[in-house]
Every structure is written in structure tokens, then in C-alpha cells.
Image 1 (cartoon, helix red, strand yellow):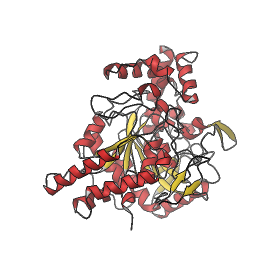
Image 2: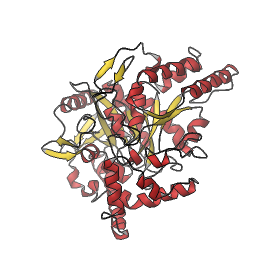
Image 3: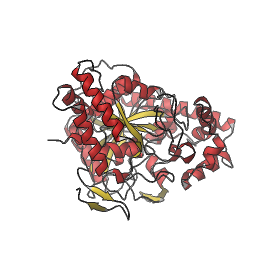
Image 4: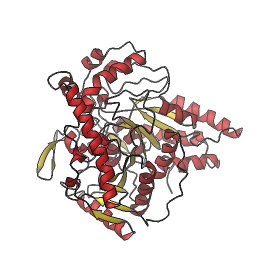
Length: 486
């Protein structure tokens, strides 16, 4: 029997609606869970008293039978680069630490209209420029499966809070894998929608033509619910109850190449389970489709970053300038990237135009490839290696030594660049008890089909775990010592 912090969104909402538990009881359990795991550093802005007050208000509304909204009484964490009225939108950087927006971002407004409670703002990689969540301004977020390891990023705090039981779901943002990477490394479901499916206003940007908000949760059913709310439309499709008709393309020679020895047996076992359950898996050589890896994918975000952040600051009415944001960067990796963008690595308009054309060709490649194979989606490891230690700069992928960012974004980058929908679902744990994720990429606007397939993969694999219950972590040293709760 799951404890209250282990409940999914759907389970918690059902229990509250049936009055098996009150919203206050549920939120109190989450607040206590957050207190036990606060050293994982998932929140950067959190007011438990205000959250408990909101829960009491929901219970009064429910007693009056005026509250039947799809998320009524469910607390969600919001990544620190998404505007929430009354809470700073710091984007993980010092210059914006006190920048309080005037209104909710549209995605937050849609959740609020559905009755959700905003639990707080989640830690993130500074300015979303990284995949470790080792933040120089707010400190690193830590993986609930091993507090000495990264949770992934840039939406690391969003994943940490769900995996640790502080909230049942959260919002992140994804430009190159920033929802799916932390979801995979923390044993969760993460969804990147087709670019443009959700509203993008009220989010501190990197690259408006690539950025998207995306949900992180424990189950695909929860993500499907959040997708309906965030997209403003209901799927209206029947529930999938078997795997007939699911044909997936498996790019063994490319996106499976370099898979780590500890992750390989987990994922190979997952493939066998899917085949045994009736999934049709077909090999595909993506080298036949040369634009799956568009040349210099970083060109687009590098060109768009400065202007996009400047426009956000101006339209938000903040008394902070872009140069002040740059001057306040505390994370060395982010400082190097931004220095390159603004200096020797500045992208010309000609290079930007060429990259946009290459991206259109990449997007077309997804359509052509899946049509050629009569497949619904590509199936591949979300990341090639489990979570590395905090502070690691290079990792081994196959026979190559790669910087951490390149290694962890290798498989998520193509779909991010093309703007196609992608989901990661838990595939199991390595011998070291570290999560491994299995990912799907689909053709543009195949979001609902991708979610349906993800739900069936989840059912077949039954790989969900819950790493943290009542333990506390001592992170004064290397993060490995666990303290018994009092």
C-alpha cells in the first residue's frame, strides 16, 4: 500500500474527491516528506505554511461541493524559470533572485484554473544552460537515489521533488533534453510536447524556437492529464488496452551505440519484455537520414539567447538588464557558454538561417523515417549512462571520453532540435540501484499517440520505484551518509 507521498496525481485526486483523505492531510504528508528530504535541495522557493493554508481552503470548497476541478487540491512544483505570481522567477541566477513577476505564466494559469496548488519553485541549472543542476547560485540539486550524484538538468529540481515525494508532479522546461534527462535519471516519466503545443509566454527563455514547458510525474496517466490541461484540449481518444499495432523503430547503430555496461542489461531486458508483450520492434539505420543530427545544433539557441532574455526582462517590467544578468552568473560552465555566445562564438545571421533550414530538414526526416518503416516512433535509451557524481566533468561513452553535457544530451538533442514530441519512461534500475529510462520520439504533432504508447510501455515494464521514504540525507560531506528520521 503506497504512502501518501507515493501517490500519483490521479490516485491522490481520487482519494481527495472520494473524501478518503482531506487535501490538508495529503499536503501535510508532503510537507513532512519535504522536511525529511530538504537536503536534496529541490526547492529554491518554498512556503509550507502558505501551502497548508491553500489546502485548508480547498477542503472548505470541497465540503461546499463547489470544487470538482481536475487538479483541485494537488500541489505541483514549478521550475524556477516559469513565472508564478508572488514568487521570484530567478531562473537559477543571482541577478533575478528577487524578480517577482506580476502574473502567472499561461501554463501556470491553466494549472491554477484546474485547481492545482503551487507548492513552490524548483531548483534548476543556472539559466537552464546545463544538464547537471550543479547551480553556483543556489547549490546543486541531488539525486534521490544517491545524493552524491546529479539528478540531471536543467529541470533537476523538478525531478528531485517528484522522485523524493515532496510533490506528485512538476513542470520543467526542455530545450535540449532538460525535462527528459532528469526524469530518466530520477526514475520518472518526462514529456516534451511538440514545440508550440503549450503556451510559452512567461518563461525565461534560452531559445524561443526550441524551448517548451514539459511535465514530470510518476506515471504516464498523470502526464496525460497534465498534457490535456496544458494544451487546452482533451484527446478524446480511447484508452489503449493492448499492444497490437504498436510498431517501433529501434536505431541500434546510432542512438544505442555507446550504451554503458551497467545500463545495457536493463534496457535489453526491457526490449525483450516489450517484444514478448506484442510490440513490433524493427531496426533502423538513422545514417540513411542525415538530418537527424543537424549540423551545429547549438547555433539556434546561441543566436536567440541574448535577444530573447532581453525581451523577457523588458516585457516583464523588471529593473534588471541583460548585462547585469550576465555579470551575476555564478556557475563556471554557464559563464563559459555565455561568454562564448557573446564573444568569439557569436553566431552570424547567415549561420542562423542555415541552421533553421537544417532544422526543417531534420523535422522532415522524422516524418520520412517513420513513414518508410510504417512505425509510430523511435525507441532508444533516454541517456546512455546513469547519473554521474556531482562535479564530474567528463564521462566515458563507449570508447569516447565526452564532456558531461555532450554525453547526456546526445540522444535527446535530435528531437529537441526538430521540435518533435518525446517521452521517457522508467525502464528499471542498474545493479547500483540507479534509474535507467527508455525514450520515444515521434513525428510532429503525434503527441497523443506517443503518450498512449508510453502508457503501454509503462504497463509492460512496471519499472516505477520510489527511492526515498523516511530517510534524511547528510550532505555536509559527500552526500552518502543517511540519517534516520526522528
